[in-house]
Amino acid sequence: MLYLIYGGDSYRARKNVREIVANLILRNPGAAVHRLTPENSNEENLADLIYGQNLFGQKSVIVFDGLLEGELGGFLEKKAKDAADSKNVYIILDGKLDAGLAKKISKFAQKTLKLNKLSPDEIRGWIVKEAKEREISLSAGEIDFFAKNFESDLWAVSQALELKSLGGEIDIKKFLYNPFGLADLFAQRNKREAYKLFHKNLSSGVTAEEMFWKLWWQMRTLLAVSSFKESGFDNFQIKASAGLHPYVIQKSLSAASRFRKDELARIWDELFAIWRGSREGNADLESGLERVILGLA
Image 1 (tube, rainbow, N blue to C red):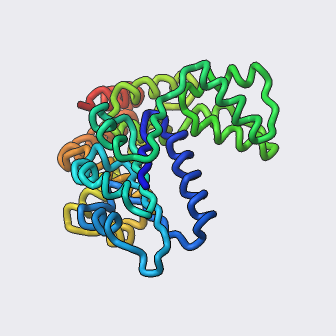
Image 2: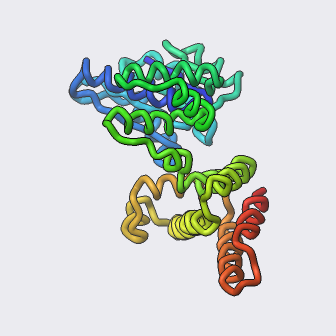
Image 3: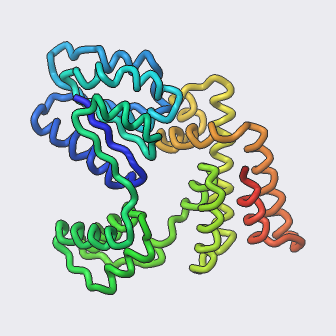
């Protein structure tokens, strides 16, 4: 069986995947679950999971997370029919896809779900539904606030609603400000959104220095991971050498692939120069950070 779940709304897409996996495990307690990403996949292990059989005849659920638009997309596209004909459950999870590619895959999928980002009115409806499911009461003002300020960030809205359902108070600044948001956008080379968030944070009272150190940490991590990878280290060796959490390593490897090694070193040098200049009083940290963000290609 094959599912295709894709679109710009990663929150609802991943929620659907979790529900499918949970239902399968409920029906088949011994089912094996595998999740393949661009960082831990190759044609060989994809083929093993599509054509291999569990020795005890138990079902497996395999999530192909973000593979279609990468190097393995063509291989996965060719194997879509075989996955659909299998007794195992395969879920192709991706972001925005080319219409032609989505059509080719959906031709074999037993279920296709395209989840675009919600409109402002749809977000309000979603918030009301989520609040009802969590048995919490929201005023019209709170609903309006979430819809306007969180835009389509359903992850943040869900986090805030979860806190309220547990009896906690919602710290507005905390939920509007993601301390690593700017660093993540920078690592994605999303100059436009990084620039917007930079100024939004400043307007909300976040200091340039706070954002600087998050970006500094991000670039230092990318440089370290990139150097280890260049030296032939695998993820386990990188973890042992760098002392980083596996999730951070995986995320950093993905981000580092978007930059050349010399480019990472140049940005690191720029950040160091900005910091030194601001300490010596002959440079402005805020202007320097803005320049680095706008320097993204």
